[in-house]
Length: 418
Image (cartoon, rainbow, N blue to C red; front, side, top):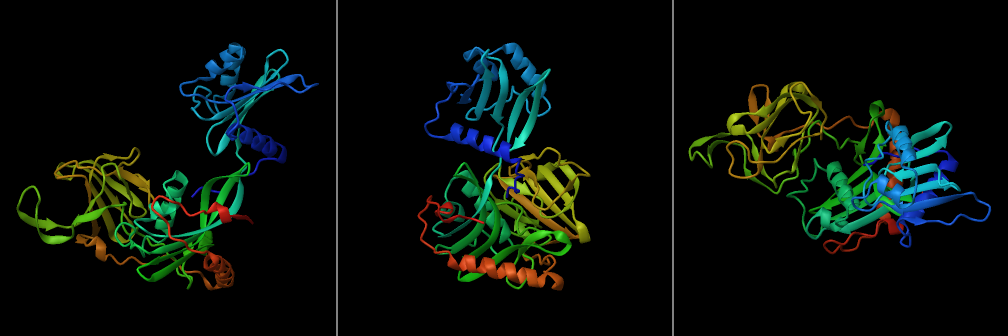
């Protein structure tokens, strides 16, 4: 989830929020030049970048100096190139009474602004973090088809669904275990700007009831200062391996020493799991490790092999492509995307052929018993119990309502500043 954003100095924060509110307001008119107030020797041009529009187009439309634009480009080259502006992003240009540029502000993305100001003898550019206000949101819902539909189809809701699934991934298989009527509750940070909800942040606590069994998770900084999620007994929910390396639809072929090969039509061992998923589905490293092989290899197609601690090795076959930077000797962390589902090599359709080897022996991934991470140490137990009780009360207070497919629970309707 997005990290907490640094807050810039008060004056800068107020000016940025004011600018953003204008640019995103429904009544804002793209490209509208404001008439300066009486006694003010400058005016401000505010607008939204149109599809295909360049900064040169904007300068020409308002009769601004192209020579000054060259100077602005030169000043901002190391911060953000003015040639790289995107449609839909707001901008603000302040000019003096002679139409000379005093300052230019452009919103790079949801994280930061580019701000260029005139400083003799030229211009100075800087990247300014957008000052979001953090609130605590509480939401809950009931599963009809899947978690993503229950949370809604907006991009921010999808990210929240992924984060929630990651927390409980070792206890619940969100591709196959969900049932109609399962419920969830979430206490989550929300980021607001100019009085409007913008996106979800870090999940602070969560509860998921699957098939009548309720699981809870609480975020806490545990041993060695590492932040993680723990259950009500203070046990880590994280493990050294993910439960599965991708989000899949079904398993088409399991681990077997006597399987009929779908193409060769002969019996031979299949020492892995075939996960069926759409072409292009991201495939993640099961755990921390070092890439041992990453290339095309005969019937395996595009293949990545990763060596992990304690004698484990994982294999990811038939990838449509291997992610850039994934090569022999590269270090990867648990959850890093290493490639994408495909049907390269000897394959009848898009799927991932996934295998785990311990020493020289291949083992069934579905029967792998991976130990949990470190539990809350005794010296931190009192602090954890305090947070667990507080977040537990918040989870208990969340009211559940049935969620129609595609309708998100009103999360930020109940958000409160903390």
